[in-house]
Amino acid sequence: MSNDTSFSEFLLQAFADMRELQLLHFSLFLGIYLAALLGNGLIITAVACDHRLHTPMYFFLLNLSILDLGSISTTVPKSMANSLWDSRDISYAGCAAQVFSFFFLFSAEYYLLTVMAYDRFVAICRPLHYGTIMGSRACVKMAAAAWASGFLNALLHTGNTFSIPLCQGNTVEQFFCEIPQILKLSCSDTYLREMGLLAVSLCLAFGCFVFTVVSYVQIFTVVLRIPSEQGRHKAFSMCLPHLAVVSLFISTVMFAYLKPPSLSSPSLDLVVAVLYSVVPPAVNPLIYSMRNKELKEALKKL
Image 1 (cartoon, rainbow, N blue to C red):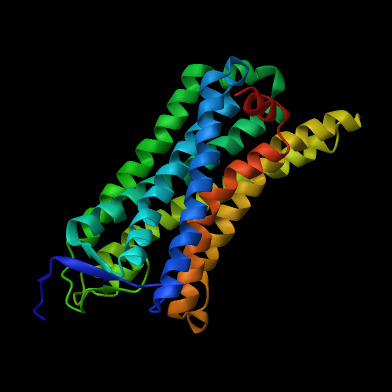
Image 2 (spheres, rainbow, N blue to C red; image 1 turned 180 degrees about the vertical axis):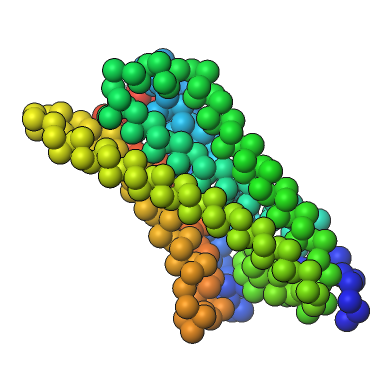
């Protein structure tokens, strides 16, 4: 091929070639997708309709559910359609839109989880100043900053990725359009620009990670000093769901992008991609509702 992008579509990697396995993949993804729609939809409706849940913690949870719905809707429906119709293609514009949407929602969710860690820190370590620090205006600004940061990050990476000439074919070795897989198709040294942008994003991500870890170290230090067992239980109930979601999010992403090259294979990469892009949006509502009495009561009322 020539040294420029001379195709109008990409070919995504299929989960299976056998028709029976394709239909099995469609059924499994359909079940996961419906579970994510139901779980996140119920949380969004409950938080929006129940005035008792109009607090900073549930405001951020509502934003998280919206981001989860968006991220899983970016990748899963197209993969389901390809399996159902025995197809692999996605248009060039569709691939660019998928890269932008997924990167935007994924980045915004990570920044939002960092904001939620700060919310838990203030609630437990600065309880007397919580109402002042986490006022409604401050919460809206924090959520807007997370969304805006994700949008700018995605815009920068998507524009730069698709400005690089692609001449190594049009087969993406993943079930959705992913920046690292698209960069493998580059035949130009300009991919170094993208690697530089990725390095900056990794530094920001590492900064958020350190902030979250430091916040929880201080949180658990304060919680362990609470004299009453009931007080400790309430504090842990506030923090453990968020900590579980953050751990699931970070561990799957780190394994996907930081695993040794010797462990890399097309089948393993597919499974890992499912773990970090499909499973968390479906599991997060369950994690948040398991130990949350207020949310359970709101869902029962709903």
